[in-house]
Length: 585
Image (tube, rainbow, N blue to C red; front, top):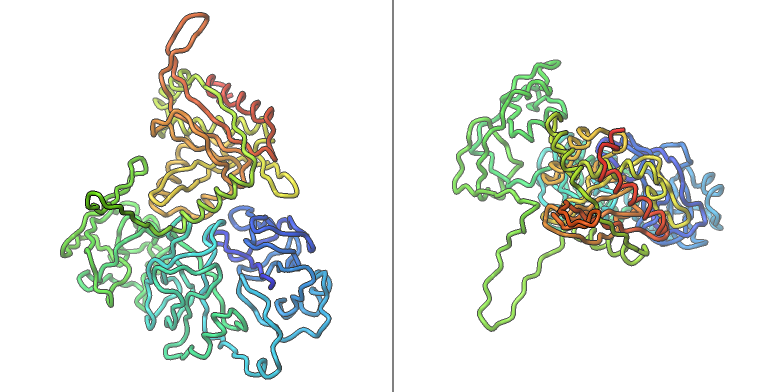
């Protein structure tokens, strides 16, 4: 049964993507983790991964042309399979015969726009086709969006709107937990929420219907079968744009002061940036006087407003629970509960139930989306990519002295890890073979240098990416790194900020680890494991002296990087670290 591949949502502002290159051709075999195409968005050029095995039967968009989010761009199935029922209506008679290597031998049935992933429908009888349900165009179907490049499904953490609630175009319908962060789903449609397809705590696959918005009182029962099947969908289909959200406890708004609305329909007029700043500072926009056009609240209106104190109620009435509203004045709520901020350097505290002496026991912890993807991706890397490891020791005394001097004049604090990112980026410039990726049928050498740094979160790992690191100063790297790490820890990081890495650094030195080996982070060809800096006795010209030594381990994919190539890269990196002034030349 064939699978439809649609244009995914690759950034929060993306409305369409341009095919920069097809990495697979019609008739080629495709594996689940192959990059079948490179898509240029408004933020970056990213890969499209189908997550299905089979043969590429159809290409719907030519190189250089654009497709809207959710448009069909390819079909993967079995060789010789009839895919005419899956093709867009306008292309059935023309494009299909030109691109599809297996022309249909029978007249094509009535076409329908279908959701991805989808299977080719069996041939229906004329009676079945006559009774097929048509979904009204005034219904807007909200589907689970693609919120990260590795996401396969998203779990509904909480519904911010309930069936029967009025919905504005910029309202957050639900909070969705992905493998990387918790994000808001915004439907960009107005009306009444008529249907919730997924319960809180349950997961939906990419493009699965999660909600329907339409006119109040519309009975959608006759259309549920078609919606769940993903077929004959003539309704407006929305791939929502995600925005980062914090995990907050719902609070009943009945005890909070109502905001002062500044729009005729009761909605607050504010720029998207102002809304984001208000959310971060905990400011109620209804109490802010806007200085923009027609009283619109803009960034400068919030710059000098301090963050408001918040006390969150331990529980809220389920029927009245809505998104948290914060007022500038302190909110007094019954039974306040302090929520400690998790530290990434401290072990995660868990309440382990006491077991009676002499009895066995255990606790099962459900897997988060992040943990599922970590398990899948790193297992694939470890057992697919032939790893080999190169180790070296680096004298860090000069770099530590240089850092002290730089921080006396730098506008931002420079860390050892910031200097490591800079040194790695410069070393990759001299050894571009290491800045490459295995693409199954070829090796891609990247002309840009994007350095990912693995950081620990309570739910697992995430890799924020410093883009064009070789072109940035130490101060720029430090600023970008601090911003990205804060976003990651607060679950505000965007997909464009944790994808696109060409090389990864994993640093456990601050956790008192001498040395370790890291698993390569696909699609990179290498990952650098960084240990702690330790005072170590060494022999210099026959005399024993104490030096600050750091141990590095480079994990290499032998399909891309040979031993000598990796060794030369490490030698160059060691030179930059032991003589840091060379990084400034």
